[in-house]
Amino acid sequence: MSEPALQTFFGSCHCGAVRFSIESDFPELTTCDCSICRRKNAVMVKVPESRLRLLAGDEHLTEYRFHTHTARHYFCKVCGIYPFHRKRVTPDHFGVNVFCLEGFDPAGIPVRQTVGAGMP
Image 1 (cartoon, helix red, strand yellow):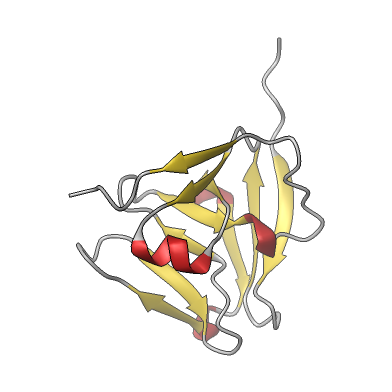
Image 2 (tube, rainbow, N blue to C red; image 1 turned 90 degrees about the horizontal axis):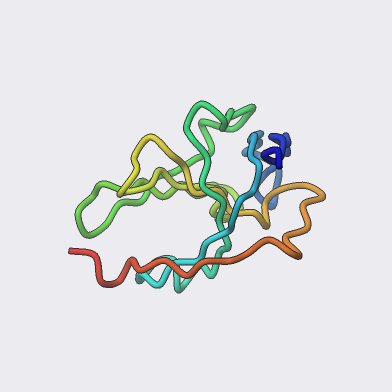
């Protein structure tokens, strides 16, 4: 059985100031129970940094760090939407908010609950 092929999706924040693309085979999606992820209620896909390209809007991104200040959560300064974050446990990967991807349908992809609240 062959592995699923990488797919390219384009994404953006709500206002379109921040635009990006990712490549993923979408093996699973994740949610997290940490204090920020619970509040933003995003469903994410994990992608290596080499498979996320910021196409526009670097100047519109603002960064938020908390707790250990390792994970870097990015938000659009204009509309406030969270498109992605650099992960704490795997800092060479991004967690991408799949609801920011154009034409993406998460139906049928397994969703794994990750434990963020219990991390030291």
